[in-house]
Image 1 (cartoon, rainbow, N blue to C red):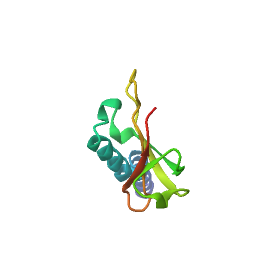
Image 2 (cartoon, rainbow, N blue to C red):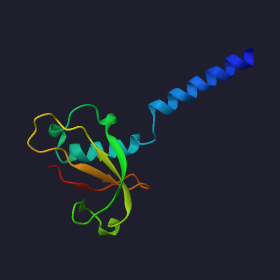
Image 3 (tube, one colour):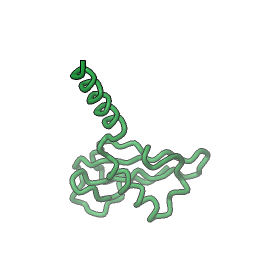
Length: 109
């Protein structure tokens, strides 16, 4: 009985930690800091911690890059929720998967 309760408790704690943290907090934070640095936060809505993170293959014609070495490579994109009825949406921030540093962005439309 004690083993069953202990096992159930471990499963519950593990399940909660996975749901709360997907491993991209540092990536979202780097993206948000870049948004604030460029004074684009007035284009966003919601909490920065809810930003969508995805894999993106860098396309030279779409991205504004700080380093051309990323062209054709996979990086992480951080997309913040746009403010409703805004004339220009927030840019999608591109972050290096390894260093977690911002390497560029996709301009808002």
